[in-house]
Image 1 (cartoon, rainbow, N blue to C red):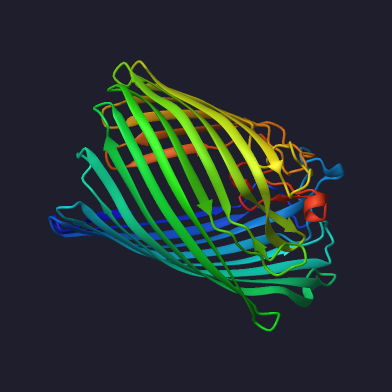
Image 2 (cartoon, rainbow, N blue to C red):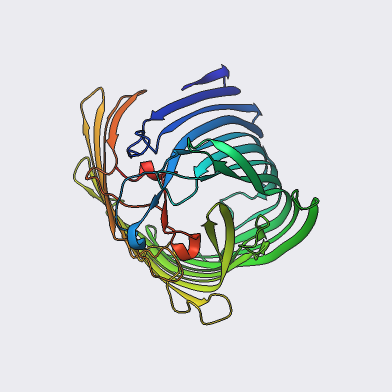
Length: 494
C-alpha cells in the first residue's frame, strides 16, 4: 500500500494491492490433489480531490480476481454430519473477475450537502464442475459462464445534523444486464469432454428506480421521531437465446414506510422502537421445467424494540434488542443437478432477541460477548399444509460469541492478542426439517505487533479443527444425496 499527497491540501492518492495463494486443506483421494485451492489478487486505487471548501471528489477504481476449487461429496444415508473425504474424479473450479469504478461528489450548500454517487461494475464468472454425486468415475460435467454489467446513480440532499429537524431526500437508478450460459459435458474415460449440450442461455436486463426520504425531528430534548418513505420500481426483461430469442417482461414495485421513536434515558442510554417495511425485487430463473420462470418479489414487515446503554465512562456497554418479522415470498436458492433456480416460501414469521456486552477490565483487557436467538416458523409454504409449522431453513436458532483482547505497550510498539469463540446451533438445511446441522464451535486467534506505520500479525482460524459442511442438499431438493462443498469452505473448516 502507498498513499500521500499529490497537491498539498488538495489532492491525495492511495494505491493498494494484495495477493494470496492457498494450496487447500481437503485432499481429493481420487486425483491426489487438494480440492479447495485458492488464488486471488486485488488492486485498488483511490484519489481524493478538494478543489474548494465546499466541493469534494472521491474517485475509486478496483480489480479483483479469484480462482477457487470445490467438489461435491456424496453423503451415506443422507446424513449431513458425517465427514467423508473428497473423491470426485474432477477437481471443480470457479474463476471470478470483478472490475468496478465510482465517483462520489459532495457539495456543501445552504440547504445541506448534495451528494452524487455514480458507480460502474463488470463481473464475469466461469465455473467447471463434475456431475454425478462426487463419484470417482464421472460421466457428466457442467460448465457455467456468467457475465454482467451495471451502472448506478444515487443523488441525495442531506441537511445539517445539528438542526432540530433533519432530513434526507434522494433518488436512485440502477441498470443491470446479466448473461448466463449453462452447458452439460459428456465425459470420456479420461474425464475429458467428448460432447456437450447447452441447456440454458439467457440475456437479462433490468431498470430499477427508487425515490426516498427521511425526516428526523426532536420532539423534545430526549425524544426523537423518525419518519421514512421509499418507493421502488423495477422492470426486468429476459431473452431466451435457445428458444428463438423469446422475450419476457415483468415488473415489481413497492412503497415502504418507516417510523421510529428513540428516547434518551440519560446521555449514555436510550430505548427505541421501530416499525418498517422492506422489499426485494423478484426476477427470472433460467428457463427450465424444474423452476418457475418468474419468482415473486419479497416483502417484509418488521418491528424492533431495543435499548442501548453505556456505564462507567464507556467501560461497560450493554445492548439488547427484540424483533418480529413477517416475510412474504422468502427466496430459496436451489441447485438441482446442474440447474440453479429460486423458489419462494409464501409466508414466514421470525421472532428473535439479540444481546451483546463489552467490558473493559483493567488496563489493556477488553471482553466482549453476545447471544442471538431466532424462532422461525413457516406459516404458508405454497398455499397448502405442506411444511406449515416447520422452521425456516438456513437460519440458526441460537448463536453465541465471546472474545478477549489484551494489549501491552512496549514503547515503540503494542502487542495485541485476541481470541474469539463462536457457537451456532439449530440450523435446518431444508423446509422439510429432515436434515439438521450439528452445533458448530469455532475458535480463532490473532497476535499482532502494531507500530506507528506498520503492523505484523499472525492468525489462525478454527484452532481445534472443527469439521462441518457449509452447505448441504438432500436428494429431495437436489436430485441426489450430496453435499455442496468447497467454494468458500476453506475459510471455515480445517
